[in-house]
Structures are given as C-alpha cells and as structure tokens.
Length: 457
Image: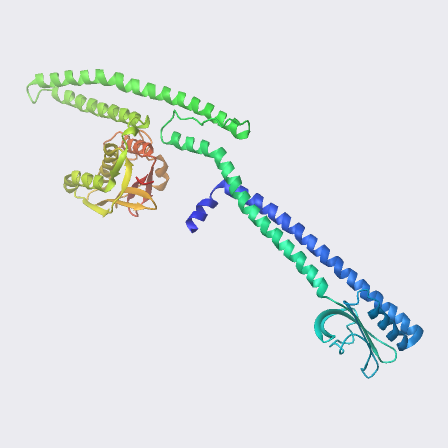
C-alpha cells in the first residue's frame, strides 16, 4: 500500500491535481470558517448588547425609583413574553436574599466580573450555561443580568454541522477531482510517454497517435512527431553509411584475406623472410573483419529486427552455460570463477542475444580482473526485475568513467587487445529488451548488471 502511494505521488499529474484541489479545499474551508465566525460573532455581539442595555436600563431605574423600581421592572420583563425564555435576572439585598428574578441562587461570580462571563446557573430548577453581568448596587445589594446560551449554542452547533458537512463535501471533491484531473492529464500525456518508451527501446518508426483535439497537447504531439521524423531520418542516414561501409568493405576484405592466406601457403619455407609480414597482415585483417562483424551485429540489434522472436528466457540457465563455457579460460588465467547467487530469473527476450551479452561481460571481467582475481556471475529477481550480473575484485575503473562505458570504440586500457565494441553491443542488446545496463563499484572491482523486466511484467 505504501509503495503504491509512493508510486502515485511520483506522478506529476497527480501532484498538480492534488495541489490545485488542496488550494480549492483550503479556500472553501476558509470561507466556511469566516461564515461561521461572522454568524456566531453577530449572535454574541447582539446578546452582549442586549444584556448591557438591560443592565443600563435597570441601573437608571434604580437611580430613579430604588430597589423596588428595579424589582418591578424585572417582574415586567419576565412576564412580557419577549425573550422571557432566555432572559436571566436576579436582584438581592445586602444580605444576599433574593428580591426578584428567575435565578434560584446567586451564581459563583467574583465582584469584578461586571464585563460578562459564562457560568453555570440554576434557573427554575434547571442547570444552564448563561452569559452574566453583575452590578453591585449602592444599598449593598447585587444586580445580575444574563442571557441563556442554549438557543445560541444550538445555532452555533447547526452552523458548525453545516460547515463540517460542507468541509467533507470539499474533501470528497478534492479526492475525486484529483483522480479525474490525473486521468485526464494521463490521457493526454500517456500517449507521448508510451511512444517515447518505444522509441527508447529502438522502435524509431513509432509516432504519437493524434488525439483529434486542438489543445496544447495536440500541438506538442505534432512537434514531437516532427522531431521524431527528423531523428529517424538522421539515424537512417548514419546507419546506412555505417552498414554500407561494413558491407562494402567486408567483401574485398575477405578476398584480400583469401589471397594472403594463399600467399602464406605458397611461401613454403617456415623461415622465409616474407612469412612474418604476411602473417601479421592476416592477423590485422582478421581483427578488422571481426570489428566489422560486431558493427553489423550492433546495427541489427539497434534496428530491432529480432524483437519478434522474443520469448521467456531463463537468465539463470544462460549464466550456467556461460560460466561453464569460460571455466577453462578462468582456470588458465588463474582466476576463481564462481556461480553465485544462482537464483531463478525469467525475462522476455532473445536467448542468443542475451547469452552473447552475458558472455561479453564475463569475458571483460576475466580479461581485466587480473591473475588471482575472483569473478562472480549471478542471477536473481529484485522488485519485479530479472538481473544477471558479473562482478570481479580486480582494480576496477574510476567512477567518472562509468558514463562512457558502452560508447563505441571507447577503451580504458589500450594495452589490452580489443576494439571497444563489446560493451557497446551489450548496451544495444539490453536496450532492445527494454532493460538497463548498470555499472557499480564492487569495492574492489567492477560490477556490471543486466537489469530486465521479468517475463510476467
């Protein structure tokens, strides 16, 4: 579940939709909060003004007619039917005895609580929460005026419930809108992304299917297709030149080799002065023929001509065969060749191409690991990826050179025989299979890993 959420969060479309929806939800919730605060605030202010006006009116009545006048005014207010259910009054004498009002007893208020407080009081035998204002009178009595908060709390609860319901709706709209926005963006970008993936796998003839719309993504699709047309044209030109050179030179090269071998055979005497130059020329031409053959093989792989032959391939069986093939070579060079780990790993691909790629990696490890080295060829499956790796504990290479590994004709050690095409062919094979060729520091030595999607994937 956590992995799925992380993968979902990596989507730019999902993040954009989430941020936009979150902004809308915050704006809606802020508006609801403002409405709630304004509604509750207006009610509270009106209540405070009513209580203050009542206190002021009773104080004026006390100055005019004394405590009896205040008691009469309180009795009239409680019987006039206007807000009688919410009004609270209490008038006591200097001894604390009740003279008028609807409170059963004096609330527990400090004498300095004249500006208004919220307290639990007992009115008509019921305990309620009320807003109260207390005023001491000149005769030692106490005047308490207040308002029952039950109706106001009901209104506040109603507004809060409505705000909560609106907030839940906003969150649901946020979630739904996020996925709808992501799906719409994925629909527009997905075709471009899938086409780019197939192009990267070597299918240069692929193009983005027109969406039929007239929006920005349609313009982008047209520009990408035009760019791909230009890239394919340039690549076809380069491949044509490379293939033409390789094909055209291979035939005369073969003829020259045949004639040189005939000359070598006709020299007869093993000590003939011309035998060594002829043998050297034959070796160099044979190396040149091998290089042309590798270039043609790379061109064929990059063209994707063998993709239709893909089938489930057991990388662990390939590793077993390659290790057995090079066992004698490793022993001859004083190198310990280990087959570990030998876990099951199944990928979709061309067995011959993958076997050749594995052989190339193992040959390089034996060649550059050095006498006394230990070379491991292993297979396993990690996170839905089938991996075949070759690792040695030789001198390794500088980390800055990792990026240049696989570049045609690039060689780190020119003293070692080779053409700089081995890793280039491995790179082309792995790319054809939609995988990755990864290099890492084995500390000591180098680790080269062919990472492919499993056959199930």
